[in-house]
Length: 499
Image 1 (spheres, rainbow, N blue to C red):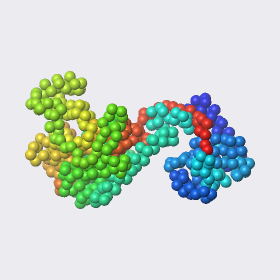
Image 2 (cartoon, rainbow, N blue to C red):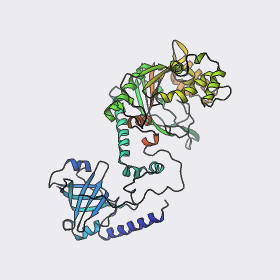
Image 3 (cartoon, rainbow, N blue to C red):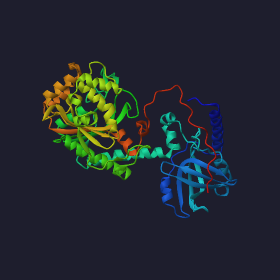
Image 4 (cartoon, rainbow, N blue to C red):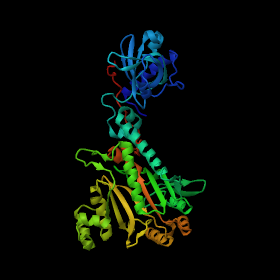
């Protein structure tokens, strides 16, 4: 950690305060402190004259000669304390004046109300619990630098209270998902993150070395194949909520480490999964936001209504609706020329199907703001899904799109081992070494008909909290390492007047 000259000066000042506190008998990094409750509990339990014990970080101090007002803050609230020399003793009061903003202290005192009606603790005794050697972000401007907020999220949480609300909402979303599924008979499982074959999706994996086995392994890009093996083994309803990893780019909707909820139900299909995810997402909105109608994330944006039922539209119908009724009658050369005129990257030889999907990805999907199930996709796009009975060139799947981004694909799962082998071979361009033979072996023992889905939790939280970047819903998003972290913030200023 490299400090500026000013930061070094303030740190040295705090080190001098640390020495003074030690000399006064304070333990600078004290033992456990038994509290009467969180600061929210302290506020809720106000009773004139009652004695309680409270603890938190000092975020405001106002000296008044022989007394001072201060504010403590924890993860739930902030609460005012009043320290008076005659109440705590001259030596203890003198020692308190060596505390700094950011220090953690524990106090014991009794409730009273100030002239303005502010609930306050009159401190009878106090102790230092942890000394902060570096200042908090400047009080008036907080932590504004976006990159620094991501790199030093602990300061972001202190300086920007609304940030905490986003991550509280994320926690409630995870809890709701688990509760929703468990109430419907689903069983939570855990499958390997380190895998011998990167399967279950098409993506570039992270590779690591398993020294004890003398072989390379992959961080999973999806848990799908393992979860389907559990269907073979007799589990009817399973889900896994955990991390996947893809060694690809970073942007506003992608992080290489991300959280996914995958769900599989024996004897279900694509429509079973549509009903399930419709209830889960709308229920999460109600549980987290108290409404299924979400306000616009930014000025000029469209509000989102998650109230069921949601629109269902076949992929080909959507393409014709947006690109023209004759789209699929046009030649590959014609649609390729059209796509290039729209700015799509289409090398020579790009097929009609590839142009179509590139146009869907880049031009159509982003226009789907309200929740939309896009169904019946070309079979080449989804090698693990069952073909449509009325048209084997399509697969019985949906892509749920909300706010212009794919949120959740769902399938009628392919349980035909012969067709599955052929489809995976086609995906692997004939390279048998890329096939997961254990998964294919499991299918040959018989897998029941099933429906499955995978939902990106990070993107779901983005929708529920109105965030435009995935980094704003990850406590510690992936960042490029730099030689020395930039300075966190200016030193704290004097506290606002307390009463």
